[in-house]
Length: 356
Image (cartoon, rainbow, N blue to C red; front, top):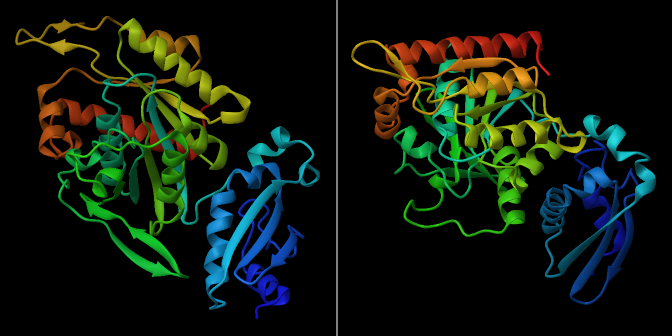
């Protein structure tokens, strides 16, 4: 029969992802009850660690399975507020940093349809062209489009076992390591998940993946300010964010909400700047036509003392490249030059840390 000492020994190999110490040395294991068929374990965590309780639970189960018995394990969590006097003051120091990834950049927009995934794709490839090692997560769980934009809709992700845990191996296309829910679920199927499931999926896409060493990991977030945004900003160390908008008022109003979210204390993420997409259309007579209004993104940037990273025109080549799965930045066009300039600006700002 298994005993408490064996369980504690197994759990001593599980680290608290925030405190960076094992659960036993932290005295987090408060109670162990052993019956004929069930072991109940009570774990106390700090408020910050409690947000990652599913990561802790999974790692505990991984170690407990190694004990090789027929018992079932039920792990219950509770918060010990004594471990962290002021969570808000320490929040910045308790976010997870993903191993081997130097910089994580979140790309988001207030509303859908503004070209956020197109921006994410071309920024990722543009940074790779500058010589950086780049990964891209399609975190738009409910509307993944990155597989289409990289012409890999029919590719299959592979997995490997590591310490009894399934590790995802991302696919590679155009030098970018890619991960998308669209590579796991057939494109004709809808993802019908509640918020917590989507948030859990995002954590797995960051933590349970063989990313290798990356200079940049671009996270293409869904539009709006949802559970996924909160999960990313509260639990992980994000080096910067990019807000995508079109010039029209209906878009900049929603983009401003994204700016406000990343400026709040509990979801604070540095904002690198704003990209204005679909800014203008150049007709055959070389005149610019401002179909969606003029300077909306520039005015938003000025209002919040942010940099306008670039103006991207309405260009048929961009949309065709996205549909064909070959990002426009790989071509030699005026639009690709704009993206290249944006990517150089982003890399320089990250290096110099000159943004808010």
